[in-house]
Length: 176
Image (cartoon, rainbow, N blue to C red):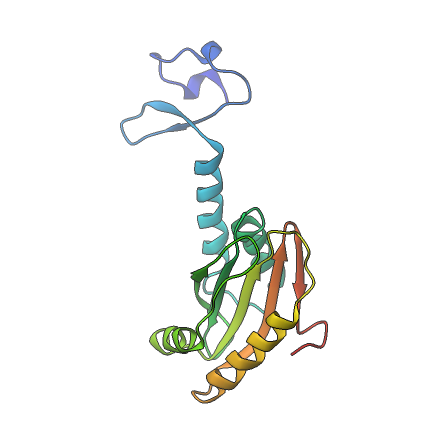
């Protein structure tokens, strides 16, 4: 950042070189913390994912999921809602659990799919243990949700498990 970008009332030398500064609407500079940077990064990544064809840009979806879920210390179950052309409608974190499990209610997943007029879904959850392998419970949940959603003509394209920087696709493993 050059000295010209900083207002004359702020001394650049008073900040360590690793500090990130942002300018607010009044033109004043302030320091931002890592959580704020990550929150903005998640919004930027979601903006890149929303409205895009998931099947033609799977890396964008994976990048978003890594940033959003990879570092959490508790389980989160989320759904990526897709339209009939497999474009992202929305990403919704539906359930939050403990370090080893979360309760998922198929009725609520179906309701959210209907509200958003989804044609297909990606199911997503994280494993805070950083072990990306699907459990038997993950497989059973996927099948229960597949059956419930089939009643309203919504397909599940994949169930992704985020474990730190790793993402495992249950579809790619033949578990769908």
